[in-house]
Image (cartoon, rainbow, N blue to C red; front, side):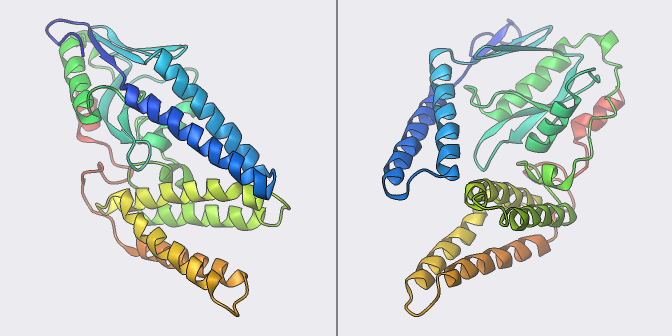
Amino acid sequence: MQGSLDQPPIVLGSRRARAVWLVVGSAGFVALGLISLESTGPSLASVFSFGFFGLCGLVGLGLLIAPPRLEITPSGLTQKVLWRTTKFAWTDIYNFRPAGLGLANKTVGFDYLTERPKGRGLKRLNSALTGGQGALQPGWEIPPQNLANLLNEARERWLDASAAVAQPSVYANPSQPALMAALTGARIDRKGYWQAAFVVFAGVVSMSFVLGVHDGLAPLTTLLFIRIYASRLHDFGRSGWWQLLLYGIQIPAIVLVGTAGGLPPAASVGVGFLTQLIFTAVVGAIPGNPGANRFGPPPNQRSAIAIAETFR
């Protein structure tokens, strides 16, 4: 990190290890896919996997060649990622806080103070994914919590006093559909959780009647449930990694039933579905923490910084 609050600008670089893992991981998945093609032949799932991981590998190479750069100045933020440069004024954004982009992937989210004529749908998508209307690129050289603190302090120091009276927009805490709200590292209450789970289950059952589509949707369905479970676990103070208990029981049970003699092949599928159904019910029955926990404020409640901003 270059510069400081007393000697701006502050310039942050990105950790190269993140890009390296992206390239190596993508190459590994592509290699495994090529091996599996020799025995199973091409399918919708394999085409989707090749395209997805190939794109991830190209992005990783781009991040290695031109690492992202974040500049913090008295006038605002400038984020440069690959070919895209994004600028924010301090009068446009506020309420920086850590946000989740997966089970272990963290970044810094924020809200907008002013409504923009374009990008309203994108802001709602960002809010669903990270718990904020916008988010910075993950993987900066300092931890998200430290970066969020730095940005909040910089804004307080450099924000022009005459512009500080601006009020948060009506979209400071948009109400999200249940499924969108569940696709976040933030918290989701029991009602939203059950609504999101029903949408995913209904979608899987509906698409199962379409020939050749069900197998291709299996990876996407798994990712959706990983996100939904993580959001629900966060609501009662547990890490998203607790859902490994499900897979630690489900996978051995499927293997044991599948290798047992005299049982039809559908028995292993039934055991796997029953195990997940039990876990889904248990996670959906536990009440959430009434107040804020380490994953943030209760669902649909504003943070202390957002409330304070209203009374500037």
